[in-house]
Image (tube, rainbow, N blue to C red; front, side, top):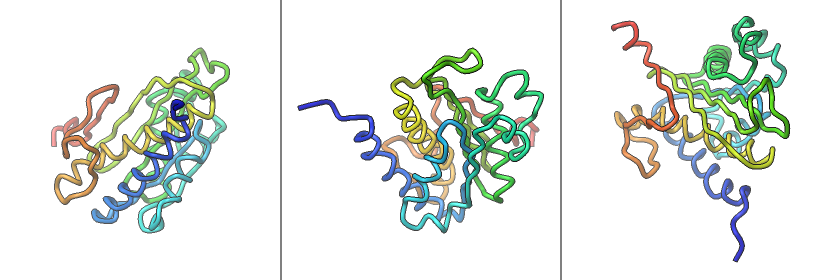
Length: 202
């Protein structure tokens, strides 16, 4: 028996997770919007494919060109000039920008290098995913491998997982997303968390 393909593995995980995310957001009265670069609309398509998506999915922006990240999403142009489009702070600003633009509770963003060539000195498989919401923000930097299409699909699944983890505090308060882990706990591997309330001392 052969090894399952990347597409088969994705089909077994991402759609079910998207449905659970929509269920959790509906229960909490939350909404989500996404800003995409390397995934080129795949994340939005995954979310829209889930039944009942209209209740929680606000919309998306595919800002593939670097200048659109600044002009549409409000990413700092100086940051883009200095660091390029593949950077954790760029992902954060994309997520905050689409959240504000779409009037969503949560903003999710993807940026990275799908290949086949490196970009701005960053190797293929370098990916940054950000989620910004009322509890704070998170950036994940999974190191992905495979062909271009595989990296893009893996990024979609990783983005859904990061959104799930950001939703866990809400789920702990009112029930929501189950992933086999402990509800309400934030993951520690490869994820940087920011809590604006804690940083401001409030």
